[in-house]
Length: 114
Length: 111
Image 1 (tube, rainbow over the protein chains, first blue to last red):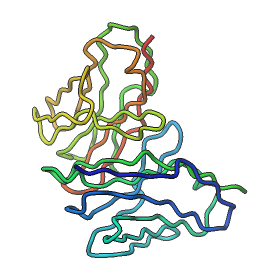
Image 2 (cartoon, rainbow over the protein chains, first blue to last red):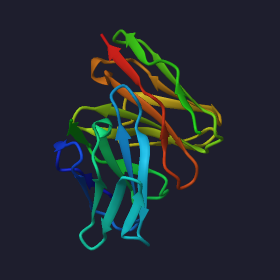
Image 3 (cartoon, rainbow over the protein chains, first blue to last red):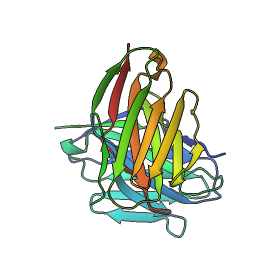
């Protein structure tokens, strides 16, 4: 079964600098991953995805990198802005029947300091 | 834009009550999900449904049931509410392998 780990519960970064959020997974049968952002009192919103045919996917200030051999992905935010302060979850397919089911990490709380 | 609407933002119920949480999506998605979010535990899947009247247990189904009579609506039922079910409940929907779209959540307190 898939396990997804976000080992840093929190991260503080100065405005304008780079934020790097990390995520490790165990089952590489299905290499398609998602990042979500969650503000307090709101549901998570989809941010960016990456599949195994790529090792990088970029969308504006957000870039996700996938290292398949290490079973590791990271989300880079450059430059970081105070509005980026939120909890970030990575999600990976469960690796069982039905790849539309995802398992989520425990989240990393990002605080961008003005 | 996909809209997933959860009927209540905040709900307070008493131990032993039967509680219904409702979720409606407007994009004809076949997949719908119920999660709970607790501090330090992330999002844990309670139940999901891949079609009308079809359902599968997630990681923590004990104490919960679900109903999906129409494609757009997915209900979570707490059969006999207990204090350990106090949590933030999130509904989501998705199309095929696409990302899940979430509602704003229901913060449920069981007293």
